Image 1: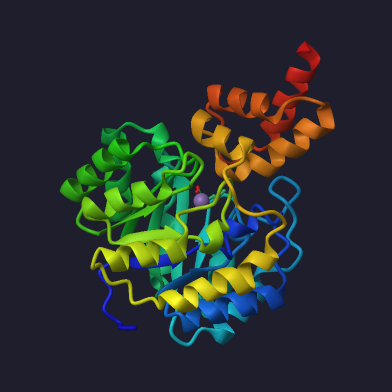
Image 2: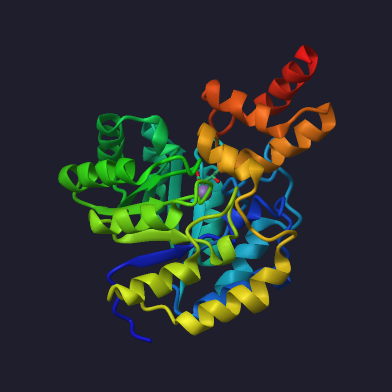
Length: 336
Ligand SMILES: CC[C@H](O)CC(=O)C(=O)O
Ligand SMILES: [Mn+2]
């Protein structure tokens, strides 16, 4: 294991993985996973409610454990890794950011819909003032043409973001679309570029590699694919693939494999496979975090969850519109 890293991986299972677990992480689970990630020398570990700081609510799902306790637990076992938090302006506020920073979080990822970067300046500035490394996280990037994405990334850069991410929230982007987007960002912004994929069309690994080829140096992964929908680029596999390609990540492969198998697999309610619903997320371009909500609504109203997801895709529903899921399921039920 070396500290030389050409690609910096952020492990998101303790945040994105909160979605398939219906936000039921316990302190004990977070301690075990974060300690193993730290021991494997993962540079960044993200810990928050699935929808970011202050996400615990009826709209997004109530957390079993206060996320500040989870952040504190992760910080307590991370003497090499930095703990990151996600914040969606409008859900989380500067108050929660300050609380997370006081507990020892060192990176803030400020997430906005891909066309709404202009809601982020206050939060990015606050994170910088708190001495945090700062990321602008452009969600649902498949919904914007490349020119628009570049404009929004430039805004994030102008607010002070150290890194700007292309976020394929729906797992809908095809490799050529990732190539075009990352290439354009490389030409038009001066800060680090990152990529966050979801594996709903089985393209998260391919898309992450294309992003790296085009100059991205920050890639997100979830160990054992523990992320929303079919999960993210599988971290332990990414570490192995990059090692084979001669790209150092600084991460211990055996330790990541053991963590995946011995600690994370037993946490999963069902294995993270590409199931009907996750495939439809990618196919229809719907937020991966909608999967569980759509399943519940479909069961409640006796409809096919795929029909609900396809309709949500047609209506271009975005994060924050979770209440639409039940409405759409009810409309489909009424038409039957
Ligand atoms: C709802 C927030 C979302 O899970 C953030 C994220 O990881 C994504 O957009 O993919
Ligand atoms: Mn995600």
